[in-house]
Length: 248
Image (cartoon, rainbow, N blue to C red):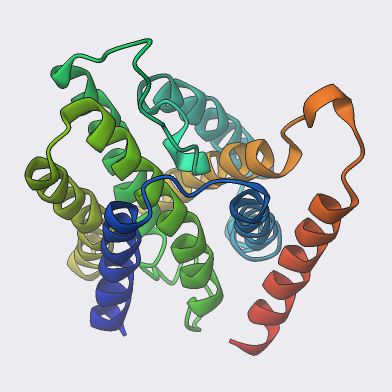
């Protein structure tokens, strides 16, 4: 199962990133609705899967809340460097401004760090996860990771204007989550890290997910208009998360 998770995570990011070479100017209402669906799914799977398991095994629920809160604000710091690519925000080149080539590397580092951390969620220490596969969680990570990879490549191509280097950076980013999976399983099997380590780690990543997903789903519409289509898409995403958690 670990090998399958690694392959799926890598391909989700790599294929989505490659698609930006073919559809560099994709945008519009449909793309935004896809982001909303993915954000609602990620938010829901965090609420119904990750947090309940954390609190179920927690000795002190207040401490868990502090870790989640810390992860929430840590993501705010990471987004200072990543320019919002976690949300699937596409960067379109413009003659009105230019970019330094070196400024793309903080973006890659911030996104790869986040991707590495989310990969560790698929490790299954008995002190955190119940004894079952986390396929619903894997799907949530994939739904989040694919738009992020696509958005990242639009940024990289804008900054570097080089498909060769963009491909290299895409490969590195695509390997970040699989590396997190491997690191998580290694730590679990080595059995030389306390259970509290995973409690902190999973709490922080949960906070990351809550920040990203709520930003995507609850971003204010222009003029604060009510958007029934967006609301409906978010509800569908949440329902799919519930069904995936029950059946997968």
